[in-house]
Length: 632
Image (cartoon, rainbow, N blue to C red; front, side, top):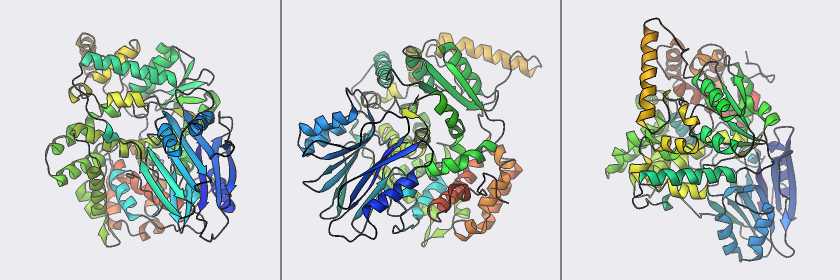
């Protein structure tokens, strides 16, 4: 992982500890692995700024200062850049006033974070890229600004560890946090596409957005064929921009569509190593191997025989994502040590499917045709709680399980928070509004954690987070963007040979032509009929790459019971103990599907609170004994 961290103090405030002492405490807390490196600079009294980076990663010099000009720090990288990235920033600030320099910097496409210290104005600015892929958590307490790419390093001795009850409510209902909220009151995530400015003379803090999803308006009518051709071309260019010619390139390959398109384009330019993980014989494993073989990639599979790898990965996953990402999403963690030996950069398919997010559309779109704000909020509330990941607590279950906090029901707090995020979106088109709510919350606060923990070991570049691609695709008319064959048509255009391999979701060919799909569907149906009559010509493939439900009923059961029913957990007062035990019995009985989405978030909440509020080491916070074993 890379990122910037620092301490900036108002010149009129007395500090409890020197800024240099605090920034070194932050640096020590950020270094989780032997290959993590930090460097710290103090360009002024009361100001100290550092950078976290991986050993061996290509990294610009830090800091940089033009004689008489501002100091500059960079984490991450620019795309479509010529020359060293820090030189790009220098040229911007050399030839423009500060306001224009920030405007030019924020128009840059990339995965970056920049800090600029201006001695003349005594201001520190932190600028993140349009989609905020390099996280920056910050707090301003008694005239002192602190910031870092993770939350726990900011919990200095003088920083209150006050729990945010709304965060608990959100996570219990949606299995994620929303917006810019964290577990700790007073610590926030810097919004994407933002400039944070701290005035050290006055001790004032200001954040402003320079771009938002709502700026994307639906373009005039575009034909299906033109949209497919242009989308494929923009996607190809975005992938090629992320190849640098000297890094060992890798792709985490599944049976889906995004990763196979990236592989097809990248493998035509450079050798690509592909990585997959999962239970033997599952669709992802079988299809990924077929796709890699056809593309000529060196392929590596990491088998999941049982759930014990979850215990091994849990402490590092907790430390990197700080409970914002449940352990049921930690599947890539167990591959990172081996990936670091094989690749330098992972071309990630993250957010590739977001423009085609029919699940969100189907159930919630009708509610957005009404003028009833309560109906809109409830439709998104239902979608986030039941459809975007494992189905979570239903409203009746939540009413019986979740107690009050500070006099308010946790269930009520969650719905009110969701309503505020629905109201914050101003897009006129209902489909865009829903997609943008999804992008701001589900994408950035839940699934981006896959990028975050992968970046702890190798570089990550995200082709689908590209200015030109996003500005075009998200503006396509609904008739094109929501067409069931649009995603398939783009796949066929970019990766025609790989489009004749089924996709994992339904084992059907991701091909737009019925002349290709129909014969394959009939063939599969025939095989199914033969199988039902005792003639098995092919081996059936399971859909699950990791059977978390049964992991939790068997090898992970002692771990779950230790976390859920520990005195410390129950004493927090968030749950009705009888309702919690009844929910656990339902899961252990195994007579209903998807109870994992109701229980895993409660475990994740407890681990996060032990890690951040109680201050436990990550293994102890995970309910382990300090040696990676389940506590008795």
